[in-house]
Structure formats: C-alpha cells, structure tokens
Amino acid sequence: IKRVTTHTLQWMKQRNEKISMLTAYDYSMARIFDHSGIDVILVGDSASNVMAGHETTLPITLDQMIYHAQSVVRACKRCLVIVDLPFGSYQGNSKEALNSAIRIMKEAGAHGIKLEGGEEVCDSIKRIVSAGVPVMGHLGLTPQSIYKFGTYTVRAREEEEAEMLLRNAEALQEAGCFSLVLEKIPATLGARVAEKLRIPVIGIGAGNGVDGQVLVMHDMLGITQNFSPRFLRRYLNLFEDISDATRKYIGDIKSRDFPNEREQY
Ligand code: KIV
Ligand code: NA
Image (cartoon, rainbow, N blue to C red; front, side, top):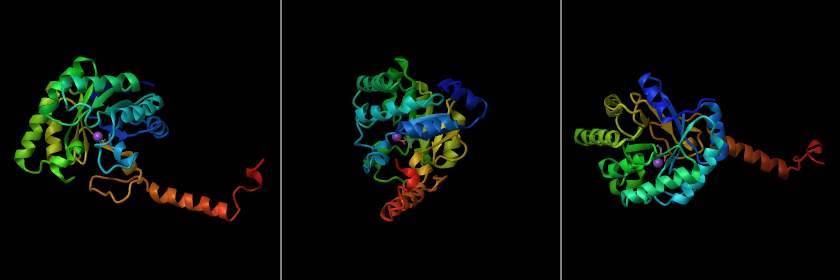
C-alpha cells in the first residue's frame, strides 16, 4: 500500500480530489478506518470529551494524547496520522511548543501535529516546521479558547471577523503549515479561504467549498447523544444499536439462554 503523505494531500488539492479525515483515539477503531481507506486520521484533543468525558478539551494532557496517538499509529498502514497538541503544551513559548511536538513525533511515531490559533502561534509553527515536523493549523471555532468566546456558535459571520480569519489563514500558510482545519464558519468564507490558499483546507462545518472534510468519529457513528449541529451527518446510530445489543445480552443471561449447549466446554 502506498502511504498518504502531506505531499499526497497537496497533490489531491491540485487535482481537485476531496480529502477524507476522521478522528480516532484507539487501535481498534483506527484499524477499521485505515482499512476502509480514510486519507487522514486525526488524534484530536476531542479525546478529552469523547474518551475521558470532560466538558471541554482543556483538561487532556500531553502524556494522555501520546498514549492515544501510540495506539492509533500502531493501527495505520496507509493513512496520514496527525495529532493535536493539547491546551497548555504550546501556548507558553515556541521552545515549549517545539518540545511538545517532538515528544509526539518521537514517542508516538505520528506523522505531524495540529495546533489552534493564527498569528499568535506562527513563531511556534515556524520553529516546529524548521525541525522537520509537519504542522496543520486550526481556525474558526477553536475549542481550546472556548472560555474566551463563551459559546460554540458559528464563527466569523461578520465581514470584519472574516477578514481577520483570512489574514490568519495566510499567516499560517506563510509560517509553513501544510494544511489547515476550519471549524464552524460560513460556507462562503470556507470557500474563500480554500481558493486563496495553496495548502489543502479541511472543514468541519465549513461548507462544501473546502478541500476536504473531517468529523469526530463518535458523532459520525452516532455514539454521541444530544449533539446535533447542522454540519453533522450521522452514518449510524450506534448508541441505539449498542444499547439494543447490550439489553439482549443482559436478557439472555437472566433467562439462562446464554450460554447454550454449543457455547460451553
Ligand atoms: O479534536 C478534534 O476532534 C478536532 C477536529 C474537530 C478538527 O480538532
Ligand atoms: Na482538536
């Protein structure tokens, strides 16, 4: 199998071929996604929510991200594996950012990292890229700064904020990012950014004019409940399916149906 690299993604943008990306946090799921032909797996700090049960992405640590990343990397034969730098592991200064990126590359064997923010993180990005580590940017709704905004609503609806996002996107490209995630912004703005930048732009709630799409696996598979933003398309309702299976299993034990004759030694 030919591996997906950052160059493959650049090539895909040039050929107008859309990029598919999903999050994963463990070996077994990553194995299924890689086997199914996903282009990129993101070990997102959304692990803080869907794996650990926290309200926000802020509490997850670099050590915990590395643990998830190690499991995912072991499963992937084809796809590109990108890992989020968690909150507090890069905002201090560019040296701290570089050290965190190096730990993820070295200890997990990841292929690149992602971090949130615009101009304010460009010095860190330049330093990480100089060390040979591919960096993906992340603009629009940036969950690590949720307490600055106070809500998870659509970002950059006003022209002034849209212009700022465009400037930040260009700054990230100039700083050396190989790609950029745009979260929860108007589709027209997503298309403007994708058209303006050379690097591939991956959207989550950023419309159909960007170069690829990403979803959190638990949302895509219908494991999460009470989360139905407009951008989310559910391909399964696993919460219900797993609940049904669990209830059947319990019932079979209680009724003494399980195990039957053929299921014992
Ligand atoms: O952590 C995450 O899952 C992400 C994606 C939503 C882009 O950053
Ligand atoms: Na994230």
